[in-house]
Structure formats: structure tokens, C-alpha cells
Image (cartoon, rainbow, N blue to C red; front, side, top):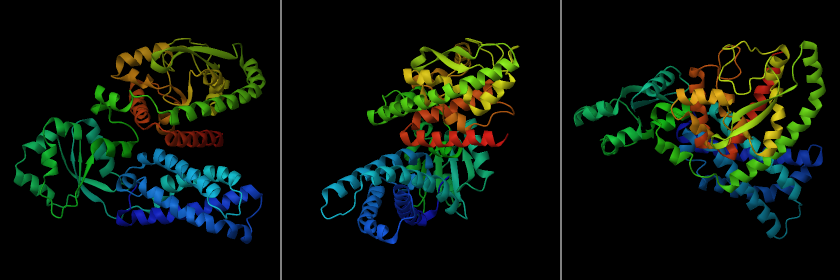
Amino acid sequence: MIYGGKRAPALLFLGDIAVFCLALWLTLLLRTGSVPSMSLLEDHAGPFALLFILWSLVFYMSGLYGKGIILFKSHQPQALVRTQFANIVLAALFFFLVPGIGIAPKTNLAIYLVVSLLLIFLWRLAVYPRLSIKRSRTKALLIADGPDAEALVEEVNGNPRYHLAFIHHLTPLAFLALSPYAQKDLMTKGVRAIVADMAACNSHGLLPVLYDLPVEPRDCDLLDFTDVYEEVFDRIPLSLLDQGWFIENVAKEDPFWYSVPKRILDILGGVAMGLITLIAIPFVWAAHRLEGPGTLFIKQSRLGERGTLINAYKFRSMHMNEHASDAWVGESDNRITKVGSVLRKTSLDEFPQFVNLLRGDLSLIGPRNDIEGLAKRLGDALPYYNFRYLVKPGITGWAQINQQYEQGHLSPQSIKETTVRLAYDFYYLKHRSLGLDLVIALKTIKRMLFRLSDW
């Protein structure tokens, strides 16, 4: 979690200014191919100093120094991308409309957009959390029920890196049954945060009670249980889901400013994967021939967006091609080949799906789709499972970069593992944005490189 007390906004502001300056220096370095001279820096210092002030104001107006952003890092990626694009538009208007600026910013702005966005992500999501850890933990009261609430208490209280420590845990009904005196007594024991299942509290008529608690001084934060759970685990608490959640978070169409750039990136990614596939074909074919008989490619019937069936193409990684199997690895006689093991560890077996990317069957990033038979099996076993197909499936996704599978597994191989994957998938459905997609893309590359370094 991200925290830092009252000094957090100041620390974020100073870090943002430093990032803006470093991004400018790196932009000039990339643009000229050499270390920027003092005269070149002086030419850019004046105009960009005004821009840095303007950009900081935009950050402030976008809420990037507010408590919600500081507490919950999941709120940041989309806000950062949107705000940085707005800043670049302001910069373009500044350079082209304000007279007397003697520098040519067109190429510089294009480079600066990429460099500053990457550095802001690195600073906000990786560096700042490590610099701003609080020495003391805020005492908190948890009002929620179910296994997800118990898991949150165990994780938070057992790990000092979190800024909260739950000293009381009550169900909504148990808290409501307390007398006003007992409720006040809880709050006078140093509780400075209440984490509550808002939906359950509302259904039991508890919300007015929470807002009227006699806290002195009145500096007690009221946080939603789902927000805190998502921040701690990076996934959705499945025990609290209902159909209303999907109507609120998934049913609406994606805005064009997200769907159009996403489609463009899918096409570019498909072209790149296609080129890599063409280069890899003779080597993969030769390796297959040395190991034994079998086809080079396989075609699988998998679920697409809204549950439609698509044909997905991959390099063969198992002895037999199970077109629509409902079995996990180990449940049938089919086994991963030696060549297939290498293909899976490098993710090269996925690259022939460039065909599906170009067709629009798949996206680069989204929930991982299942073979037809396995999808039916999981849909029967897990509530709301098929809702994950309300968005276009992806080759990589939030679950793939976050979930830790059992030893030797590169994907879920049980109902238990799939349940955890589902919680990550629903997190992506709720928070999907260009910012989150960028985080997933960078972490996917990192994971692929780590797999290669293990050899």
C-alpha cells in the first residue's frame, strides 16, 4: 500500500518535479544522441519550467496528490496516463501558440510523452512506496464478514509493511448489536480508521450509525472494505460479488479513447508477433522433428468475447492436440513435450495467435480464455465464472503477472487455482484502462526475461 502521512503530497510533488526534469534531460539525450550541453539545457529550461508548474497544477486538479490516490495505488495508472496525455496537449498548445519560443518541440514532445510516462510510473508505483513507509501503523476496526474478511485481517496484521493494523474485527450485525456506549468505547481505544463492507452495512441500516460515531478528535477515516482488500491483494473479494457489481463495473461499453488505442496496439502487437513467428518456424519445426512425430501448429476451440467460440492457433507443446478438452495437465495421458516445455517457458507457443490478434478475436491484454470443454467445466463449478468473458480475452493479463501457481505450473491446474485467477480477472474488468494495460505489458516482459534468466 502507498502511504506517507501528511508529508506524502509534498514528497510526491518534489518527486514529480524531479521526474519532469529527468525526463527532459533524457529526451534531449535521445534526440541529439549525446549528453545535452549546458546551452541546450538553458534553451529548454525557461519554457519547460513554466510547463512543469502548469503540469503540477494539472496533477493537483486531477487528484494525484489526494488521499485516495496516496492510499490506493490501483487508482493511479489510469489517472497518470490520462493526465500525462492532457499535459502533452497543453505543452503542444503552449509551444505552438505562445510567441517568442525559439525551440522546435514536435519530435521532443513525442519522445517526452513516452519517457515521462515511463518515469512517472516508475516513480509513483515503485520508488515512492519504498520511500514513504510509515513507522507507525494506524489502528483500525474492520466491520465485514466472510472468508475474505478473515484473509484480510491475517494478511494485514501479519505483515508490518501495511499502514493499518486491525485491533477489532466485527461482523455488521455484531457491531449493530452493540450499545452506543460500547460503540463509543471501541473508538476511544485509539481507532483511527474504520474499514467496512459498505454494501452489507447499508443493507443492515448501519451506515448512518458509522457516520454518526462520536469520535474525538474527528479524524477517523471511513474506508470501503472492497477498496482496502483490492489494494492489499490486487484482486476482487469474490464472496461479496453479486450481479449488481457486474452491471456497475463491466456491463457498460468501453469509451472510444480506450477501445480505439487498445485496438491499434493489438494490431501493432499482432504484426510484431507475426514477424517473430515467421522467424521461429524453421527452428521450432526442426526441434519437433528431432523429438518425434507431430504437427507444428495446433488449432483449439476456445471461448472469445461474450462466450463466442474462436479458433486459436499455437505452436504444439503437447504430444496430442486436444481440440476442446476439459482436462488439466496430468488428468489425461497427454503430456507436455520437451520442446513444448521450452516453448511455454518462453511464451513462444503463444505467438501464432497473432492471427487472432489481427482478426480481432483476441487482445494483447485481457482475461486468459479457456479451451471450450474446460470453460464449460469451470462455468458449472464457479459462480459468475462466465462473466469474465464480458470483455475480449487476452494473451497476457492481470492474473498471469500476479498469481503464483503450484510448482511447475504456468497456468491454473485446479478449481482452487482458477478461483484465485477469477478474482484477479474481475479486478482487471473493474479497473481496465490504458494505464493498467501498460503496467501489465511491462510486467509481462519482466516475467519473460526472468524465465529466460533462470536457464
